[in-house]
Image 1 (cartoon, helix red, strand yellow):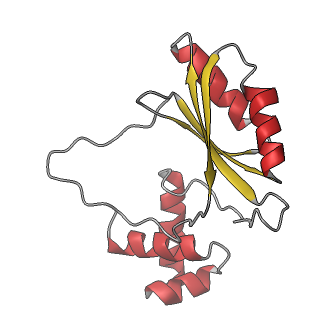
Image 2 (tube, helix red, strand yellow):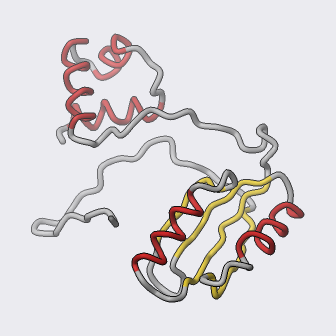
Length: 163
């Protein structure tokens, strides 16, 4: 990734709906170059899609929480099954497989603390494979507008996604 690719990514993260002409002008390249570079970023899997950012408060889901879950038995199958079932729930905003004492963190957005309590007690705590469920209510959430490239020390191995 060179400086032009990084500039394209920064602009698209700020506004994924801008036209190719607007993108090219902002980055200082020809529209054909902007289109070619954007297509290349997509084909390499750097850009995985374009998404709408939503305001959960305006959707009637103003209470957000992080729920940590420990799973037993500790196996790939159990963790992947729990990950997938949590991701399929409409309350889930994101699901993270993590290291440490917990196996999953689930970010949820729900209408109220009463709904959150019922969700945790009735849909999570009853699951036999969930041996510990803890809830942290989020006071404030700020999502970065863009993700820049991190500098990697020479010789450092690149991360691979959990699969």
